[in-house]
Image 1 (tube, rainbow, N blue to C red):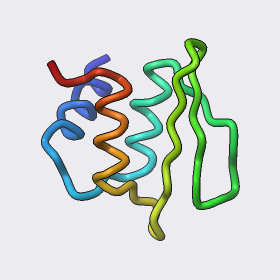
Image 2 (image 1 turned 90 degrees about the vertical axis):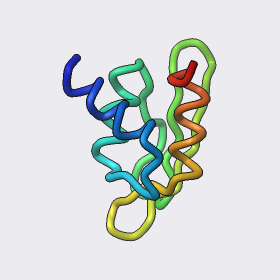
Image 3 (image 1 turned 30 degrees about the vertical axis):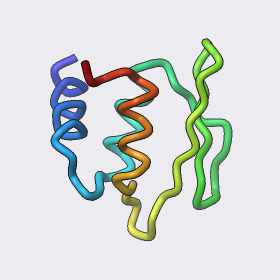
Image 4 (image 1 turned 120 degrees about the vertical axis):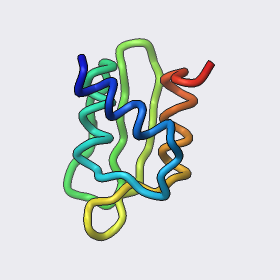
Length: 78
């Protein structure tokens, strides 16, 4: 859990971009799984009907606008 908590804190510090591997680790720890692979967009779902679509920039980076959507869907801010 400590690794996930560090990544969540990094996400909340409003970076302009975050590595895709880090974002994927956070999403999977909250029960999200991907339904698409091999494209520039990835769709993630959980068992409760929540859905996220992420566009991955060249170089495997996720933009800030998608990080904000993740924070909102996961209800990470109080």
